Every structure is written in structure tokens, then in C-alpha cells.
Length: 86
Image 1 (tube, rainbow, N blue to C red):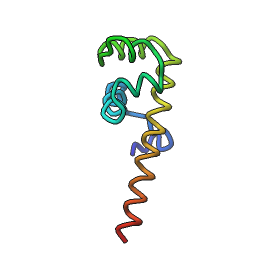
Image 2: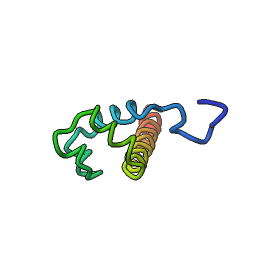
Image 3: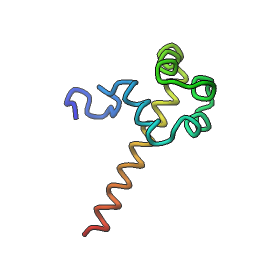
């Protein structure tokens, strides 16, 4: 974790990385259901989505919020697995 921004989980994480992780988890269809913007629902691609997200603050915020939820779910899952392993 970066010591300059210890409370910002998005610090240093590229938008490309966020989008790729969300795609790996949800895929385009589910991502478009969760965040209904055209770049996710009509002929989606990473490059077109990045262009839209960089120019549209509200859409980027929704993607970042979903990513934070995803990180929290992973953290809970990892803690659950550790508890089972004891």
C-alpha cells in the first residue's frame, strides 16, 4: 500500500486495470446490467469504454464504486476462506 495515500484504495490503480478486473469478474453483459451505459451494452470494447469513462465523470465514478464493492467482496471471501482453513 502506498504510504502517501493509505486510505485511498484507488490510488495508483489505473482505469484500465479496474475495467479489466471488472470484466474478468462480471463480463460485458453483467457489467452493462450493473452500469447501464452504452459503451458496456452496445458493441463494447475496452478502448471505447476507456474513452467514455475518461470523459464522463459520473460513469467513471460508478465504475470505481463497483470496483470498490468488488474489492470488498474479495476481501470478505478471503477472510472467510482463512476462517475455514483454521
